Image 1 (cartoon, rainbow, N blue to C red):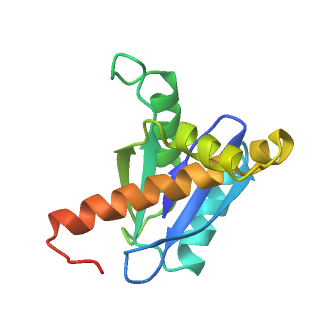
Image 2: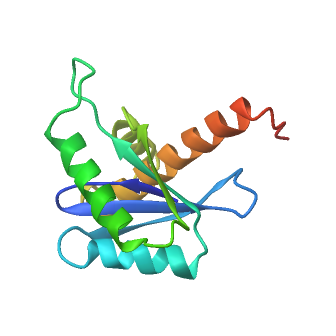
Image 3: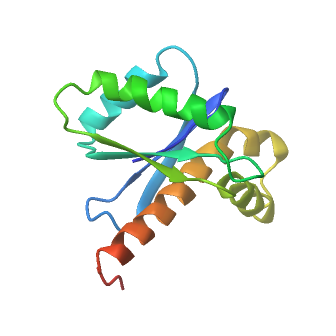
Length: 142
């Protein structure tokens, strides 16, 4: 599962069971209840890894949004008392820009883009992570 953390919305996507393809993406509101929602989703979907995107600043350093994302990850980790889900962080640079580009090319209205861009960013993040993971593991895809 991947998380595109935002102050207003959180996008998430869950891979297929083979950990090859990022699946459907969705968006939930940030704030109270978001961590619990993601935790319950991890249990229901038997998620073993959560990849949280880190948005580095223009100098390639961790800024306020990275701290917010890490704080969300720590809160999620505190609910997982049995160690069944591993929390990881992955560079999400340009995933939101890429998702905006895809939605604009698909002629999705600005209003609708606002509601789905974070979920699509999570899906792009997850696919990048899975591709990287599978390449490092020497898994041949396709």
